[in-house]
Image (cartoon, rainbow, N blue to C red; front, side, top):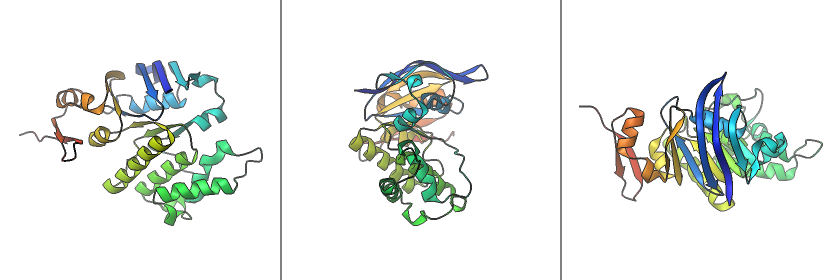
Length: 258
């Protein structure tokens, strides 16, 4: 079943196009990584799917046009975590993650026991249980990033849009986070779209990669077919090689100029 479909999607700001003519189909439970050099339009494309910037073309969720959904319906279908979130003052980690339950609350808008159970489970999965009562402002950058992901996971949506989810995380927490995302999409059929700067992570976790440059798609497909040394050198203006790790995973490594 096609969970997410883009048909000729374009988006920009103040009349200036940033992304043009992006079309793709993502089956339920798939994982797409959007990559590209700085300014390629990765975050703008993600925001257009989330309905946060004006866009042309069509975005469909399970065959339904995104524009036909109410804000509440959209929040139950799509979870979005920005790269640089605005974190409310005065909230604890638990209070903040509970905001993710808002689309599921009843008429009185009060969370119940089931909502608290969901939040506790998410905090445990992201190694945040010990920080549950800490004010957000006291967290490190990496801890805040995990709290942001916890909030969006608490929404329990069918589509996750994650803008640079590993920013500020050490390698251990980055791997743990991406492993959790992979577990969720395999177990629950969650469709995942992430932007990623780390090309080695893009090679190892998603099942599909889309390479943007200057707002246009230049390659799309399985990671091994997109992440070639020649293509990356051309579009990133970099010297790289693509290696194969002992387990068969790809590793994108820079080569120092002699």
